Length: 467
Image (cartoon, rainbow, N blue to C red; front, side, top):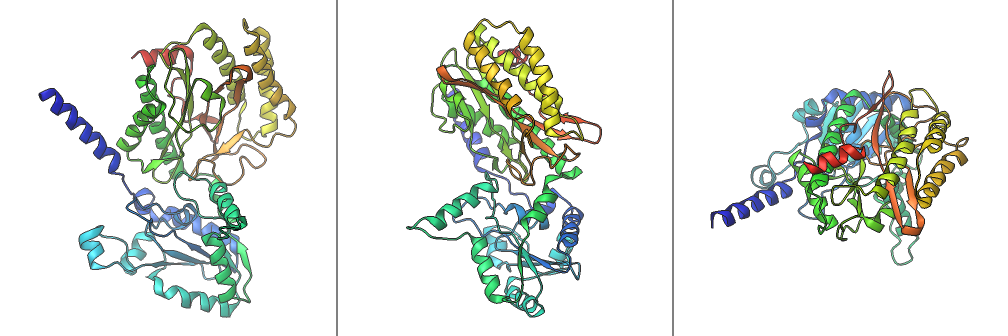
């Protein structure tokens, strides 16, 4: 009976951990000067204009609140239905907040942020006023015929990247049985009515360019998000065994996410076994791990508004077969050829050129025994050779979003950029694939692999799984 009770108690603890999601206020993540520095750069970008950004609404149910990324980046405010006016001429920031009620503060949610001097001090802004004053503020700007900058792209919340909701709302607008515009498009229409003589400009390019280069404080949080990711994937490796469902491995990772303070996931779990490894974004997670299968595991947390993105491949039973080893090790050599070619101040095209030299040398000396594996490796190398001259990127940025904004590297790899590479290797006839992914930070002196602690070689993976 004591055994049964202890197992039940453990289940209750696990459930409590998974349900008790932390919601960090922005000022618990960064000090006010971090947000102020960002706004100062926006002011420089908009000149005599003003920037107006809306925060997101409250969630439509009993879910944790998460602010949209553009508003969080500029203010750190994690209250619903807030807004901000950043004045490029006056060099001031005014935040508009909903007043809190005694019931909310004392009975429902606990103390929140309200308009007034306390919010001004906490946020490091010039004014924090009642949301009811927003209309008058816009009316005053309209009389002055100021240029107004506001985001055009649809807002981005958790487990999204900017292209995702933008495509969704574009599809909704074209749908004859829907026809809705995004909240941003609706707001722009209202601005044009309220300020007909003001020019309405897109703020996103200015903010996105800033977000592409991470500050030291941002890098520290992404480093921690990646540590959590590494621990979560390692936990899944150790838990894996034939007969488990893909979603059971997901549970192993999510426990680590929550145990380390993550709000949720960066993106849906990409956990694929056997033939599912062929797909780049397989996410049903319902297949059963079979003895002799490889598992491709791609999953990361949404940690203090920042993301990570790491992928590893491992055998379901803890041991690579000889054929799996042949396939995995040539892929790893080619993958690492690209990884080690990345250097600060170099162009992506130059990196691919250098990588191809290493790839060709690896292909010339590798002992292939399987024609299909060799053909897949050749196809991967030739894919890089074909696009060498026109290569503008090697993967995607990671930051507030897993596919972060700002263009991958501009012209060259410069300090403060964080991104991943994830080349795909496929044996078409068998519907099998391999894809690895690491978090890469460009520094003043070179390159740092943030996910370097996670096993990647055959020997290290098997050793970790044996434990």
